[in-house]
Length: 277
Image (cartoon, rainbow, N blue to C red; front, side):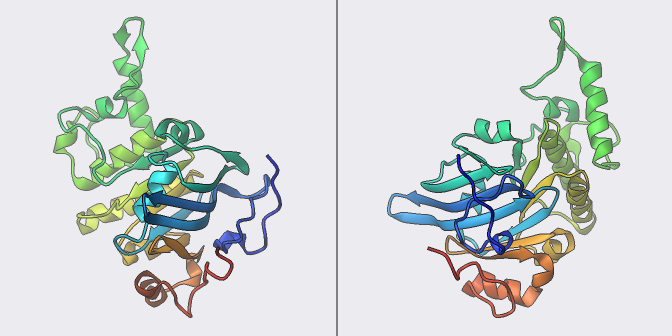
């Protein structure tokens, strides 16, 4: 693979289609990503950079292409066109296994937790540790406690609680802890604060900040702009399948974000459309 240095504006997703440099600070780079479902074009030439250790909020109206984009990154759907770069190297992400091998974990809105199992069992479901022919319950329990402590999750009384007895914020914490337990470098979170109360939302936002503090990149999909501006370092806005704007969160305010979501453009925010194909 031959890569070329990034253009000066590529950090804001300028649609240049230029491959990122191997020395780039970007963990994940998308160039010209498109996705078609028959005659329907769900994604149109998306260029996006995800820096390591930063929180990127992905926003847009329903049907804007957010879910399609994260499912493409997660390997649920292979892109119809375009290139994916991981630490500057071109990679193929055509299955969830491909994404997991790179260090990409996705926490979907339903969390995919088993209510009838305890926290330890959920954390290790399908990846149980053994000692000889028996489960190593002590090792799994100790590691579960360590991961939760590292993420500053202090509201869980016991790692042997049934997940069905946990609050929404606690369940989100368990799902994230499970995601980061296996050398994860990028966590994608789909509407993590949806249907949560004020205190539980605060817990989840703190959890996201803790991930970033540990050097883990986070992509957060959210409709809640208050949460977005509290936690995000960067913003990426989708409109009708196109990435219309991306950049540092300081370049946006609530007004410009709403304008981009509803119309695809705003005079008060950076545009990603000038050079798009």
